[in-house]
Image (cartoon, rainbow, N blue to C red):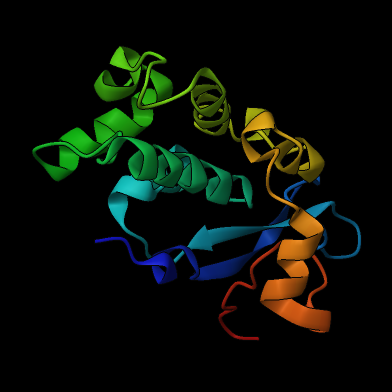
Length: 173
């Protein structure tokens, strides 16, 4: 079962993550390009490697989750889930060389464009993920060519929306 709320809990950290991107001003503070977060929870098979390693986490972790979710929606199973929790963690740490991903080839079920989108989101290094440096790279990818982002934002959020970002639950604020 997929619970989108699993992606939404984070705790603000005291250290900045340089680099910007990931859709606007979420988590921005004076003197830094982007605030860093440490996760509070989440479904293991969607967690980015930096979360498992308990490192600094930026919105690039959400991009990893988007890649895993896109794979699951197109293929019908999660790309990283293993027989045990430890196997799932090992698969996540292997990233795009995880067994299911390494065997995936373009065909009738998954297009070359879809694979490109997924593999660019599942980069092991967060800043190398599609959209991590410039969110327009994500929204401008050919896989999303038929999606009118501006219309989608208006339909989903009306006039209340200030960027393609989610709000994190902040502890102590």
